[in-house]
Length: 204
Image (cartoon, rainbow, N blue to C red; front, top):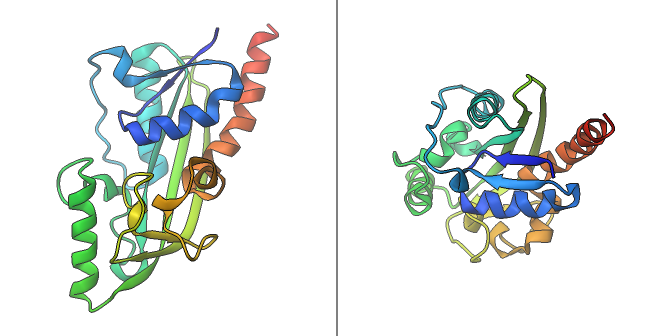
């Protein structure tokens, strides 16, 4: 069976992506299952740049095809921040509570209770032979000061998507979120491409 590495240690991302990739019929491997592997420095100024760096890095380290993504939230009232720094907005990578607390504090400092915002995702496939493919997704909505919901991760409890104006992203089912989220949209495009990629490999 073909193998595909998910270049993330974020459990929420892994669950979302693994479920979406199931129809491919490949063995999905998480970084956590591969033991101790060094991490690339995510110092690009764009989501696509960081995703590309991660995809290339892990494809070469594992010698397996790999999917990497970089994603985050852009808040209009904050000039597009936190953007590529979303996961480490409060200074510590992956501290959702601290990141959300800082986001709310920044809105309050501006006398705001909400702001238009969008989630962005860049997703890159890379294999050891140098094949690469990029897809991108976006989800528009707004951020508010009062969280709701226990699903999802990151800024989901504070984000209200346009498609569900009465619900927060963290209140959606996995299927509902996949259909409208930035990552779900990028992954949907990637799946179409991956079906052709694995189809051509298996015909050789």
